[in-house]
Image (cartoon, rainbow, N blue to C red; front, side):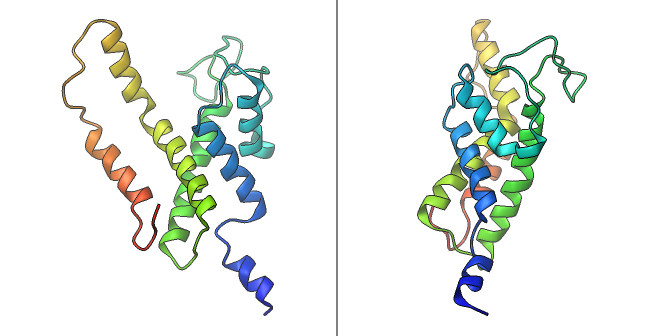
Length: 163
């Protein structure tokens, strides 16, 4: 086997996966949801699974969500969440195995993890913000906190990998 084939086999991500990883990093760094760049990043991440919607992200009562409990939700949001769940698990498994990533790839992986954490815990943080907006106390313990910390550690504290 040639060294080029060995390098490809041991690569952290393929060229196609790298594009998805970079799109998630862009989304996690705060692609403005009111500008077309947010929708462009969604399209790059989802590829052929992307559902064309408005040029900018917004809740639209005319949209049919994949979740009937969430009418008007951009149908790409749950698709991105599901992809982030699968892709993060795959990449974490590679990092825990024998595959090594370059520093720039680790930074992109961290962006994917940020997106995943936001996806998993968004409703918990939103609930806290709504309580604050209503003048309610927000200084108590959050029941979800131990699970959040466990997820952070699972995805970012990988033995032998310095993030």
